[in-house]
Image (cartoon, rainbow, N blue to C red; front, side, top):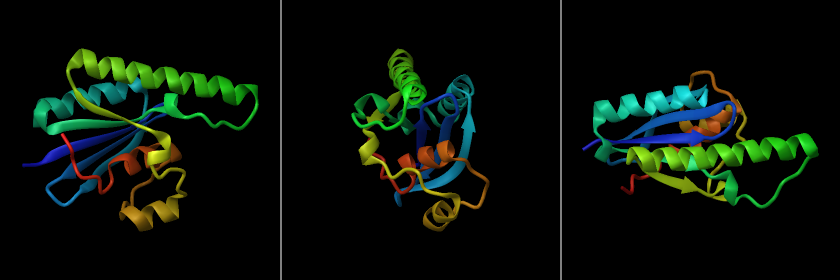
Length: 144
């Protein structure tokens, strides 16, 4: 049975990635950056197609991050990302969607495009947010 894994990197530019786990880990199918509402609509459509029991979101939870660098503007951005993590968690609970909140230190992030392509084999264009979302589900074995 195919399981659909969706990676979400929260923020103004929501990283969104889809991987299909056919027993061999998450093979990337989609990697992009969207608005939060666009990402939520795509999640709904994937659930309609594959069934709620076969879809699970892996959401980076910035609320668990305790280390920050940068000035006041950076701190405001961090607050926004933390709020978005809470919105995603609340939305998944309200919609009865399978999800896991992932501690940032438990995800490989901030890969530059050339290394990301080498690791994942993904040849499409990406930005940092999309790549971070993809790393949440690439080669992850479904546990739901």
